[in-house]
Length: 198
Ligand SMILES: CC(C)(COP(=O)(O)OP(=O)(O)OC[C@H]1O[C@@H](n2cnc3c(N)ncnc32)[C@H](O)[C@@H]1OP(=O)(O)O)[C@@H](O)C(=O)NCCC(=O)NCCS
Ligand SMILES: [Zn+2]
Image (cartoon, rainbow, N blue to C red; front, side):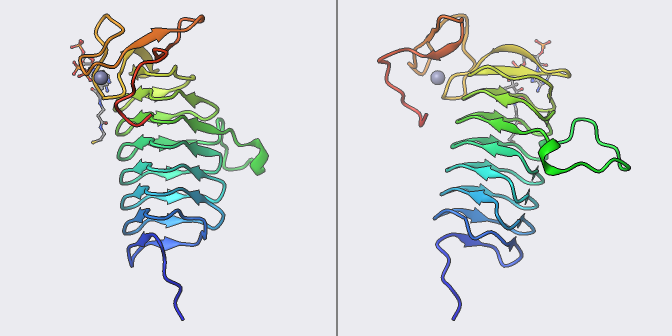
């Protein structure tokens, strides 16, 4: 008898992993390899590839045409725009065979967004709720809430949980309040309400 899935799988998707969370939707021509972990209520749009040693949290959206290679971790509530590019080998050569341990990881922390067609060079961490602009080439870690654009990507400001750019103050027009920690890093102000899932 066919096992009833607690997630949605388009008939043209190839899902070899048994570790897919409840309520997740996997659309046409997406391939999830055996061993990959995908959390609950995610949306993997058309033409997404998820390699075996990949971890995807809950409520993550991956738009069309994105490949997640071994060593990529997407924490909860991450958004990956269409055709964003991940890497896991910093200096590939067709003639040089590497084993898996030599690949470099990439972590995208909770709530961060990656713009369309951005490229992430492996070995970096994108901070919580950070925002990578469309087409950026990210070569270094990105701070929490930072907006980075360009090639190489540089910080041009900070973005609120709600998706608005923070203008020269620590209070967004949505009411969310921020503060700087001892190292000058932005964080939600202690005791402040968080209106958006964080
Ligand atoms: C980064 C981003 C959030 C900035 O938005 P914004 O604050 O409204 O920025 P503005 O449009 O006011 O542009 C401000 C400046 O940054 C530049 N800029 C904006 N986005 C840029 C990008 N991705 N890369 C390089 N420069 C960018 C603009 O040209 C402008 O430059 P100027 O001051 O010299 O004129 C936005 O442009 C972006 O890249 N969003 C991602 C969209 C996306 O990929 N969505 C995926 C789902 S469809
Ligand atoms: Zn806001």
